[in-house]
Image 1: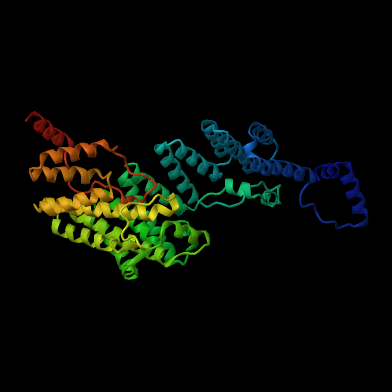
Image 2 (image 1 turned 30 degrees about the vertical axis):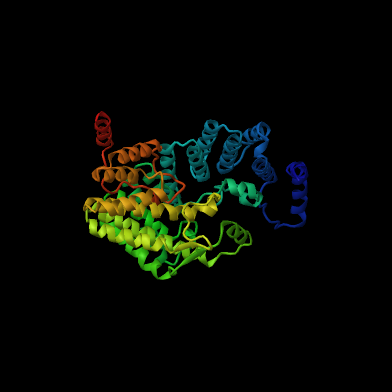
Length: 460
């Protein structure tokens, strides 16, 4: 085709056009000059082939770099730099890939897919500061009026998208919605200690979702977590920002929409049976019931944390107890309540992991609340049960030792503290919902003071 069009672009075309003018005085104008069509086909072919051959390394990279020198619209040149970056990412050269993505943005500032790919590189490099900056810029860019097609000069009336039909390319130029990016930005800020920023982003997100609901636009939020989960994440951010009243208001919304849907008992199949069911595309009713139950229980947990933050210990005990009472409705057939999370893959085990964490955190919260009102026996019982469900719980371990110390069981207290400190203290993790992690919202013990007690005990 290229050879034919090149010939048409030369004297042959001129002769044909002159001859036609003599016979047909009103011949239509050309849609596109053949020479320009050849140029367009060349760079579009290079782009599509580059997207299909990213794993071929340097040969693909050389072809893309050569294509970047072709005469073409800026948007298409930006795509060649984007694909060069993707090729370098496949070659495990992230820093060089970032340079290519930056060049794509310099060539065409509307190439937001380059910005998205840069953000993914920063995430891979665990550079949270740069990732948050990229997410913030990506979100603000997506809010600007834009077009889904590459910007093409008026001399190119044919849309390049006609020649860029490739699933591989579509995956590379994919960019999530502005709301999805805003959610990622909010969650990333909360996880990495920028709580005030994260809280504000969550509030902006909820406001935007409600605004779209009022206008009947639901498609843009389809990639977001379900609304109860978003409310719980936002509630956790508000709690961490020490706004317990606002957190409780969001939790009330979750409870009002989920509690009536929670069954009296949730019976789960054995893990092997669940795997078979999922492979056949069957969604069990028990899984749906478990989802509602976990949301309602998490809302009660956060409300317990709120009352603990307000030092209303009796109310804290009440809401932690409501959380526990929901969680004990979950049973395995023929096995009762699962004492430990089964060894499942991530997708299958996430709900059960959340279940165990909610159980451990609610028992720990209730135990600490009991300790504040000198009900030490109940406190010790709950804290020990919490450590059975969540052995790595730092707050439960420290308070369990503190309660044992107050009960004059000092050797046991020392052993409990030493065991707690043997666990590595981790920050908030991204693999689990933020509301299922230790948010440090209640009374904390001073580790220095606990070490001093151990030294006194050792000197006796």
